[in-house]
Image (cartoon, rainbow, N blue to C red; front, side, top):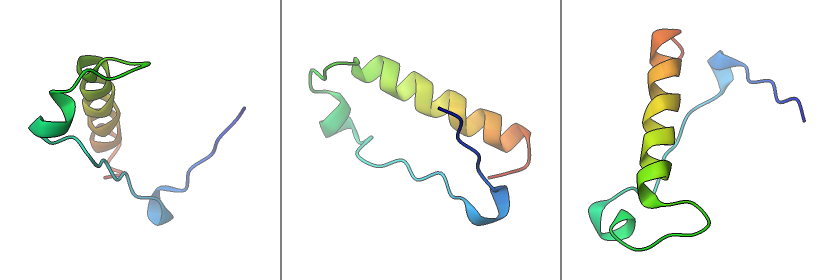
Length: 51
């Protein structure tokens, strides 16, 4: 599936990443993987000047 985003009309919104939430055991992805992927996505957008 191809997904296209328009930077000027798109926002990255990350929710439920507080310690009380990510301290739980999550499935199908671990909280460490979720946090790592969110941080990587935000960093890529910042590097492109789209955040």
